[in-house]
Amino acid sequence: MTLRHVGLVVAVAIASLGAKAQQGSAELPRWLSGCWELRSGARLIEERWTNPRGGLMLGTSRTSRNDSIVEYEQVRIETRAGRVYYVASPSRQATTEFTATSLLDSIAVFENPEHDFPKKVIYRRLSSDSIVASIEGPRGGQTRTISFPYRRVSCDA
Picture 1 (cartoon, rainbow, N blue to C red):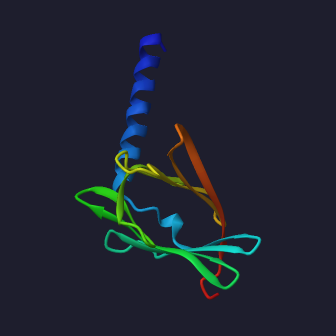
Picture 2: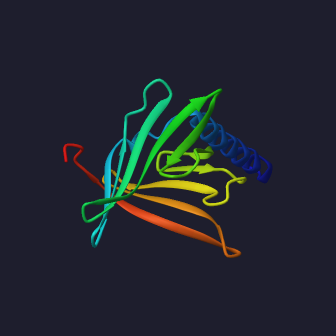
């Protein structure tokens, strides 16, 4: 095989990977479905996601300290016109939309460069029972990332 043929093979492989990533851009992150929690001392963060149906996943999150609710959030991951959006409605804040920039079998990245903080919402699947959610954006002139390592729990709790 000549160097020219190797270059062609590499170009075709890269184009194929790009096409697969593009095709995935309208697919919802099914692997996020279920119930997740993060416990840290007296703080408990719970997240629940429905299975995708009709181009929509519904999510809820609540944070409690001891028996008091500290914050909560309602979220949608939805498909509109071939694109995927993460629509967050946090307690005491305006609803904000983030556009999917990467949707693969182990990561979902949503961005809104116009939002103050965060500008990115990221979900990474580490295993079938473990994910890390992160929010990222500028704070004090530096990029700040806050991570939430969740473990899967029963939705019956």
